[in-house]
Length: 270
Picture 1 (cartoon, rainbow, N blue to C red):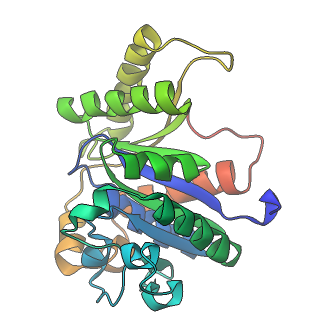
Picture 2: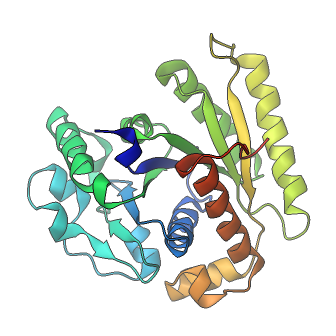
Picture 3: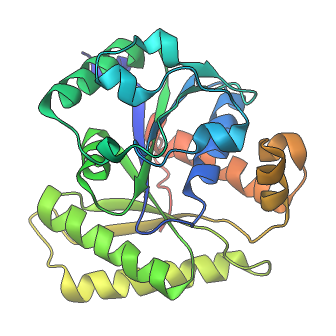
């Protein structure tokens, strides 16, 4: 297939759980939709999914059922209040931590089937560096790494970058620093980026393409609008359209759209 006709695939990952990855994915997807991009979110956390929960959507069928040949894509696909589509995954499924060769083949077929209908596909991958997460990373054009300024999150983010760089050849990451403080989030985000860059430059050798790149895509402020939206199972733009966090996520989507989906001379992040 001609790349120009393919949806741009983003893998949204995190080193650890609890950093707000799914909330960011859903709200970025809604922002993409407001920009006119046909957007699909694939819940890639096959064992502990919750994208449908934060959106308050009833689930009929799931991605694992599609991958096991138990239903068709159209049976599972949901339309959200944010204007984007969602392929939900299951929760509490031990088998969701493993992809068989048949499931991988069906996932590839699924993407070939749907990607001409969309401009953007976001894989909301699970936390950590398990085989399901790394497979979604391999399928993606762009990797978005969500981290908070909390030390364990930063440590796990570095571990994730290390594995993806050394084992899978991923050398370019867009960093989203979430909960970057209520005041001066840009400074907090830049400090996290600088810390990760310093560690990667010391311990991850450059290859023929150069050093590992970690570019700051956005610093998302700590904002009471987020727990309010989660509690109401709604999107930020619906609950708190004028909140600082809503504006920042809208700016992130526009930057990603310009840098990745419709590239221009400007480069996202530094």
